[in-house]
Length: 328
Image 1 (cartoon, one colour):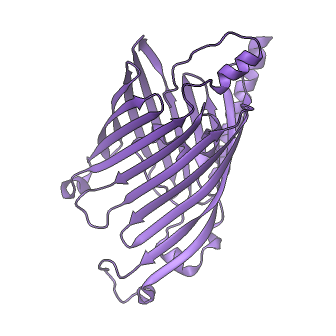
Image 2 (cartoon, helix red, strand yellow; image 1 turned 45 degrees about the horizontal axis):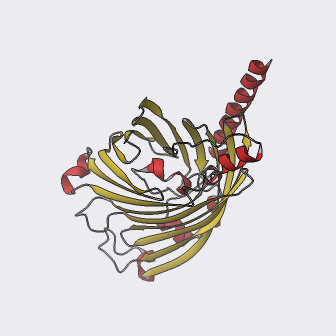
Image 3 (spheres, rainbow, N blue to C red; image 1 turned 120 degrees about the horizontal axis):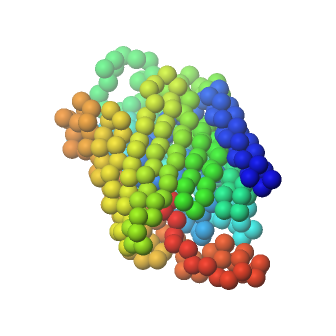
């Protein structure tokens, strides 16, 4: 009876995931910046993730893409994930600045998530985020192929448009799967000027990963991220990271028809992690640049004190259990 109930729950969960993805397919959103260290940055594109963390965490990220190409993308992100004591809800906050040529797009949003238990060790989190994008375009920067275009006479555009996104995050101590869309407001909200400089298209993100215990001091985590953008080929990322002795992380990633990457990270202290990645382009643009660099810093506030899980177990009279920090 228990097995049948559990199978029914899982079947319903995956039906729900399929429904969510189908719903996203009828929506519209801006294209999100790409990350190589996406496995440490899930809260930036999936609001359902924010309540899954054990303690308050703060993330800072900087990405410099296509070094030596003037006007190439630069991304700065600051994010906070805050889990509630009730082990059900979470709040998140994101500020992200994406620069490309004469365009700077700054996204600000607040996320909320609510999670339910699918089994004793598996949870499903639902998330939503609301915010907006501050668009700044300075046409005095750079040279343009068609300088006679009427919009170039404006020299500068400053605008704001709202965003609403949603996501699901199904996870266990050893694996996770998520689906999200950063924004599904109709494209008609943008005015004619913005429509000429922002190509408003659907984007859906699918992410997943698993943690293998190879030995007491060695773990392996393969992961994937797939981005679907309406009217463009899907972008698929595959990665594999090793966690050595609970401190050193090393691995590689491959973005199909785009780049191969090396990743390294170090748990500086119980409450601080630093990661770095380097991308080498495998497509034709690789001969014109010296790759891409990405740096991430994560701060875990309160790590070392009792986690939500430990507090709940103590309240239930269960013995204290010390868990290895999640690898995602």
